[in-house]
Image (cartoon, rainbow, N blue to C red; front, side, top):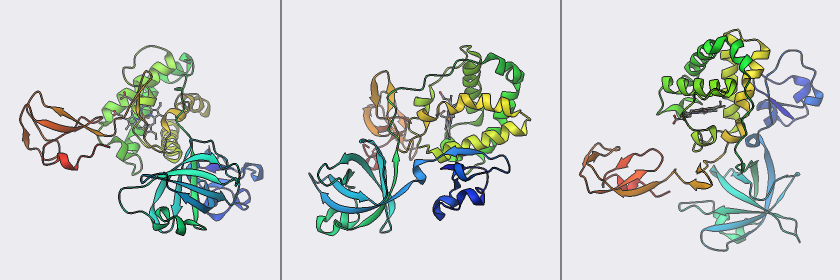
Length: 333
Ligand code: HEM
């Protein structure tokens, strides 16, 4: 089963799939006789739903519960993978970590962290749990232990792209459409288009020519906090393809260029933020911490002046500082 990104899948190839997957663009490759070019992507875990029946809930303590359930169809997963529980009672997906199978019952077991606020009553009431049916979305890939090893350079490609002039022209058109795109625009909220074009150009030049011209983070760390599911990555690649085609690049050149982007999919696609990695250390940056100000500043939230020597809260990744009025709303995690 694969997914078509640039239009509806052919009728013959989608007919045997459930309506939901047809609507999401899926088709069966083995049933498909293509009549035109199609942009295809592998199946994405966010589109995969498995019906499940809850058998039991245990609560080892107040913060977590362990769900035991049966999947109605085959569910392949590796212990440690994350998934989401979807139930009509509850608008938001409930995150869970798949632990494995109970040896005697063969039930799948997963842990759920119980939220501070309200949650579905059957999640905390063991007696009400038996027989609750839900959909499991996923499972999602776990963070790879190794970063992607970059492809060797292809300097002839750079020459064929007019010594980089075509790359810059394509990037300018591409980011015009990214900044006008409802799905991608929010990621670029704090970044100017010039900056990102410059970074992307230098990164591609270094990757393709092998010359050390790029100063910046590797893709694993520059995107570590961004939740970019496969569908968003695919959508980005489709906009890139449109820009490359609009500038008249041949299929062969597009394929050679795309390799340098596609290779980073495992370092960029994720379903929850990753900690920043510095050597072997993982640093959580999506949180607030405290410090005593060495110099006076203004609050980034209400613009009130804050005197030197004041203890303030700040966001670890963004560096935004909050005054005493705003600080109470800035949680630790
Ligand atoms: C849907 C996919 C992607 C999204 C939403 C995305 C988003 C972003 C954003 C918002 C930034 C600016 C970060 C900052 O300056 O704070 C950025 C930087 C960057 N991205 Fe992506 N990106 C995506 C895919 C890719 C791909 C496929 C590549 C590989 C070629 C890539 C390479 C880079 C590089 C090299 C930077 C500069 C890092 C730095 O400033 O040090 N991105 N990206």
